[in-house]
Length: 296
Image 1 (cartoon, rainbow, N blue to C red):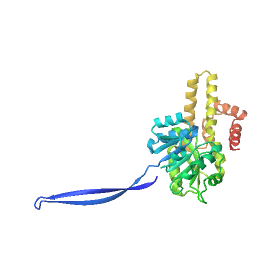
Image 2 (tube, rainbow, N blue to C red; image 1 turned 120 degrees about the horizontal axis):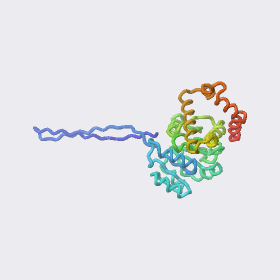
Image 3 (cartoon, rainbow, N blue to C red; image 1 turned 45 degrees about the horizontal axis):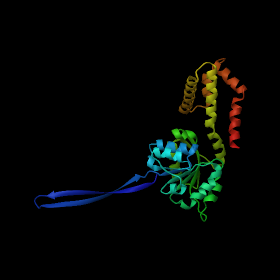
Image 4 (cartoon, one colour; image 1 turned 180 degrees about the horizontal axis):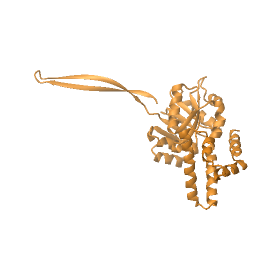
């Protein structure tokens, strides 16, 4: 976060009764404090809106620190009701921001960046671009000002960022260690983050899709529970808690999933029979092929 100084002047008074004189002395002190980062989000669709929701829930920021720019007035009305600043003007949204997050469809990135280029201060403002398949080289070309380009970050969160539970991938571009930490601190507040090379970004984008794959597994498990006689609401409660337990167990122990599976697969038991039947149906292969398809 940016640092600033506060100047504090202390006044000390002393009254000497014998001389009937009041003495006054002044002491000046300076204190460093962290200035809260002002964040602008351009594009409040599914992902941009989720980012705004997460930031508004964060204790590190106040609604006054967040500005949302979008062409959809009902969306802006919603965030205005949450206390954020809102605007239909992307250029206006950039004024006073320390960090500008461009969260639009990949085919809209060029137009959006060129539209705010003239008002960006490359020395004081940082840029985050959330868009699958847009190389940093293209972004540099679109933002070039006589050979000068800004510090920016390629970022890929998932929609769980709205609940501060995202797995966010970050690729710094021409950023210092300090600048990179500023960005990772923000996204760590909204879940967890991972710094990675740009060459891995397509794979990271595919891995981000895994939140949908996990939800598809949940749906299938719930449907199976209903077929076996549970009410849909009860089946979903069972599945969600089971998945949550699996995640927390693996996070707490650091075990490889297969090692944890071995602990609950009794020889000849129902667990190993179920796992083998799923594998005969191509479970693991289907997941891997889905990820690879998402990378293409």
